[in-house]
Length: 293
Image (cartoon, one colour):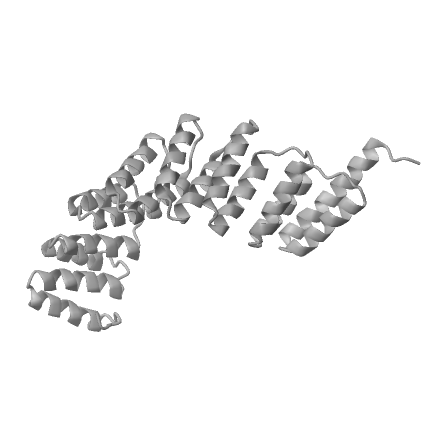
């Protein structure tokens, strides 16, 4: 006797639950085998079926299989939703396939599937992580115009992309945009902005960022401190470097070899060899590891 629609749906739901179990157990091969069994058994596969299978493969780093399943889903006429595109784009990000990620985003818009903040993160992240920061910024503009709210992770990735691209002005523009868009700053946000200003030799802005960081109650870390002192060193502001270094001692901030080297280099470049020697002595007294730099 032919199964009723309710029975068909029940079997699909059971298989989807089994696929979710595979995803939770990181068993991507089992998920693919189950999907194959469903296909051969002519069991109805819906959007959830494919989404879970694609996600399982993506999390396992099997981006080729993820994209293959995406193609099978599209060719089979199964409805693609926001989660489908987001997971496939994330697979592209893992593989560094930024052009494919853009193609998926274009297909998403053409299919009238609504993008969200995760779409923004994965699409721009695919471009930024591949070094195509200009493309990432262009995408951000598209998302902003479509009123899709980007999140802290996305914004941080873009600021970092600007820093790597040597564009400190654009990094600060994005930093300011986060504030106007009410996107929360975190330590990674400030670190990326400070590093961008360090490369641009903008020590005054670094001071402003450090002040904003304190007022925003965002706790700094070693990367923050090293980048800040390095900015002073590059601008021959050895006194600023020493003041900053001194405040680190007072607040009992964690000081490592890189931070000390930046402060020593600032003194050395300014011809303040006695100050540099004092720092070396402080390093040995406080058991900070010395290196050859």
